[in-house]
Image (tube, rainbow over all chains, first blue to last red):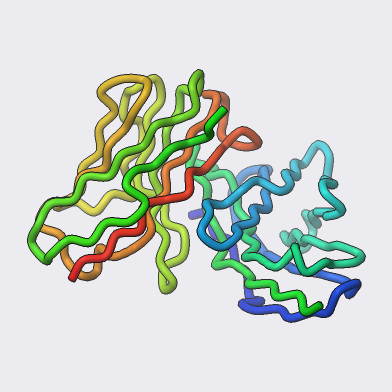
Length: 113
Length: 115
């Protein structure tokens, strides 16, 4: 079945540092891959979507790209701010035809001032 | 647009009691999803509806859990005979009704604690 692996459980950076979070996926179809961000006390919010058509997404200073050859996709930002502190989830639209999302385990990002 | 509204925000129940969680999707959204979030299991899909019809309940525990969508403005998740392991944040999301991606909007969740 479909799966998403997100190995970085916690990342601590200082303001203006470069952010890179990686996910790997397994699926039987050409995937739609997503990044969600969850702030404390809130539900996840869609940050970026990447498909096989566009290979890359950009939003709010974040960039997501995917590599079909290594079945990985990653999220990066050139210069993080304290307000970016949150949990970041990668996700995959299920290949079964169901509309459910398969989520990674999340990366807690803490940005120190 | 108030977003997806979930009530209550917090619920404490005693072991063996029933818990009913409510979700009001965004007006005009025809797909409604339920997820459960715990530290150990992360975000787990439970079930979803499209145009009020149940489509996929593959993530629902076979016993004690049920979900309904009696009209387009709300959905409920009911847990009978709650157990401590049911403690979690239950998230509802809605989407416009095309294949779920960019318009998949989550509510803030209901934090359920079973003591």
